[in-house]
Every structure is written in C-alpha cells, then in structure tokens.
Image 1 (cartoon, helix red, strand yellow):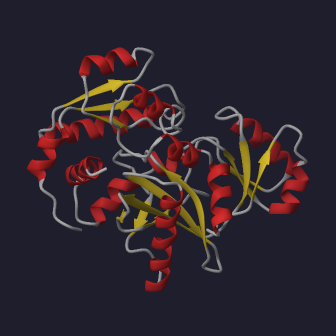
Image 2 (cartoon, one colour; image 1 turned 90 degrees about the vertical axis):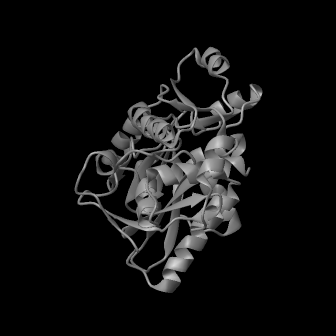
Length: 311
C-alpha cells in the first residue's frame, strides 16, 4: 500500500473521541474494540478521549469537544445510523459511513434487496413472522440460516433444517431483533474482505471447527484459523475482491467497512453482509487482514484516520 505521513495525520486529527459500549447486545465487544482503538491513539500521540455511551452522551461530547468522533459502537444504536444522525445534529465529524449507508448496511433485508436489484449475487431469503409457514419456508429454501435482520457478532444466528427448529430459532432470534429472516444455507468457504476508503486489504479465508462462524468462533476460540492468501485461483480472488468493492460502493459506504462473502460448492460467491463498524479486538478480522498486508494495529489506525481526514 502507499506510504503515509504519520506526523501529518497525528497533527491534523486534532482531538479524537472514541465512542464505545452503548446498550446493544454487542456491548462487550464494543468495549474491547473501543479500548483497542483508544490505546492505539494514545500510543500514536493523538490527542484522544474515550466515552462509554449512555444517556449523558451529549453532555460528554460537549465537554470533550472532539474534532473527530471515532465510532466503535457495534450493533443497534451504533451501526444503524442512529448515532450518526445524532452526531450530525451536533455538527460533529465522525468516522465511517453516513446515516443512510449505515442504516442500509445494518438492515440485511434492505441491503440484499438492493444487491438483487443491482445484480450482485446474494443468497435467497424470506422474512419470518409469527404467521410463517415453517415447512413452506424450508421447502422453498432448503436448510436455512436464521438471522436477526439488524444485528451482528453472529448473535441469535443458527442453521436449521426442520420446521420445529425453525420456529424455535425464530423465537430466539427475536430476542435480538423483532425482524428475523431465513437465508438459504450455503455450504462452502467463508471470506472476509476489509475495505478502507475503496482500498482493499488482503482477503482472508476463515476456518472454524464449528458449524459456522458463531460468536464463540469469532471472539473466544483460539482454534479459529485464517488463510491468506485464500485458497482461490487468481481469477476467483479478483472476482471476490470486485464483488466486495461493489457491495461497499452500492451502499455508498465511507471509511472502514468489512464485507462477508460465502462461496458454494460450485465456486459461486454470495454476499452475506457489509459491516460498517467492524470489530477491532484481538480476535477481529480487520486487524488480521491488516497484519497480512504488513501493517500493525497502529498503522491501521493511522490509515483509518487519514481516510477520515480525506473525506
């Protein structure tokens, strides 16, 4: 990747305030991500503060007077455009995607409908309701992945293949979000592609001994493996990168984002989702991808800050 001017970025960033925590189901991961970012800013010599977001957020922001708000809030209230809109009303600059892009990316159904319209490959799905004909859903889609429509960190997600399990998992998923979907299960390889201001970090292939990348596989298991470069031909790797970038661009994303993709047994790729506030913990895929590009966490932070300065 191109060289960057560390001194210039640190000076021009001004006072950076990191938002972490909040009250979503992903609070604990957000706390870890926020701490990692704040500690890196401190090491870099960037003037910085950190706020655990609660009902006093406006007063805290007025008190700290940020030049840039670095959003590390995962899930509802952080990735869905809510905090972005709040910061815009306060006329504060913030990291990542804008209100609309954040909301679209967070809503898996809305983003998939957009991708279908644009001809970007994504697995078939149905929205579930209490009145759903559970067997009919399986007859149409086969084995499915049940997901909260608005959520992350693989919370509330499970693979099911019978009607009773589908209904039970629907009820579990509604504990995380009232809107729930069933997506056709794709058996194959999973990939994560980090996009930073339309520059791509090396795609990584994910491996776990679990059935899929659930919460524990992402944040707990030490046996989770990454393969970089992925087990793909040069042409397929190019196709994967192009699909990820098109997904990012289709939602008008800005700054840092992570695109998750599956490949089936026929080697076709399917978009899963775009994460506009991806995790930055020691187990997170973005720092792993940066490491594969030869950059440590601090350099990754510098490049994110540079991207924000260039908006």
